Image 1 (cartoon, rainbow, N blue to C red):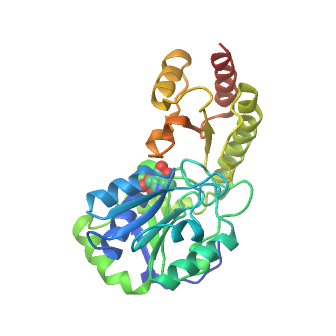
Image 2 (image 1 turned 120 degrees about the horizontal axis):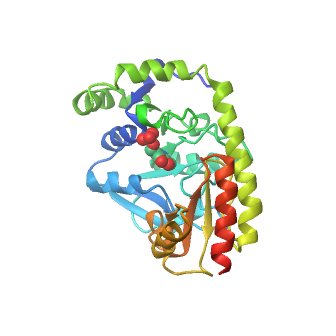
Length: 300
Ligand SMILES: Cc1ncc(COP(=O)(O)O)c(C=O)c1O
């Protein structure tokens, strides 16, 4: 999709992007290294880093920066930085990095020897702009991707990475010791999925319709402060006018009106008590029904 030539031995097939993160973190970092990620963000990054003895430096990102890291934010961090993890589109916010912002981040990292890990797992599910790959701007980053999102093959556990050339041998040795290989059947199914774009694009069209519906209906339920849902299938909503305990809020919403959402505390150490993540990967009728129930529930 990005029209970039990559040498074959830089492409590593992984057991989902989750297996990719293990290989990337183990090969790129040492125990005690410091890796920056923004809050709100996908919680497995910090959990995997912690399990490997790598320090996750979680920095609150601002709504003004669309919850993405910027050189100015990185400048404000005390101490050395060994790595940076970026996701565009992101989970839980759905926000994206523009081409110019990616250039600024890759340049910043390359100039300072900071290893960039770019999670591009939601590429293909975008609404406002196409996803920008870090690979267009640097050869030093680990690019992480997967069949779990656009290809809807989450349970097949297949992903891939494009890695900097010099890491080929260490990633190969780690993979052979930890996973041996990605299941052969899953790899066959994944390569067949490359030919299914017509059907997969219909999924994206459904997500787009769901997104339009929620962006229209949620404000009528009083949820007006929403992160820009540039991509992925999430709306990240500020509920601070309704609660300062998002976990209890989500639990009540589930038991009282049957709507499952994720509390912001899953994603943000700092302000997660005041936010929730709503997924719109389901069908459009369900989104309409959920919006109507939510409106009534919030009103009473
Ligand atoms: C941003 C992000 N990265 C990675 C993953 C993990 O995906 P995989 O199934 O490829 O391991 C997820 C899953 O939700 C995600 O949201």
